Image (cartoon, rainbow, N blue to C red; front, side, top):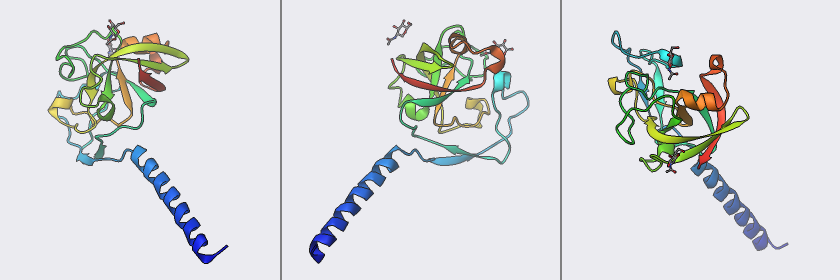
Length: 185
Ligand SMILES: *[C@@H]1O[C@H](CO)[C@@H](O)[C@H](O)[C@H]1NC(C)=O
Ligand SMILES: CC(=O)N[C@H]1CO[C@H](CO)[C@@H](O)[C@@H]1O
């Protein structure tokens, strides 16, 4: 092989490798910043049903992106007035009964309200349920009054009403966190 064709082959290889790295890079969702935890004032931060409160001084990463749609962590949320979800749902400015299958999605998946009132299919615990997207699980902010002094949402969360947990057949003492797979319905 001539020296020139050797160099050409090496160059071609280099291009293939770097373009692959770019694809991997585009699919990786990195933090956009961090928030320093503030302690909730007395009476704030409803710790009902496994909700977390910000810890003073702890750094929480924030995200504007989410991983590709698919694998996620299911968490429990209340969408009722005075529940642990804070204010009314972002999509329709209403509260929702926790007996209806509704969810909030991490900011990247919520995608500027693009999925509002759309249904998604959630599979976990060997069962499948369809639920409606009504709210955002804010990955960009937290540890303030608006977010009930809870940390910013991780970027891979489907935050669901108890109706979703029931439909998946998860016994109540195992509610909290569950690995699931979801897709647009
Ligand atoms: C989502 O599902 C609900 C309940 O089955 C249904 O009433 C609603 O029309 C569906 N929404 C969309 C956008 O398909
Ligand atoms: C959303 C949700 O599941 N809320 C529950 C939290 O826990 C209390 C007490 O166990 C229940 O009454 C709520 O329904």
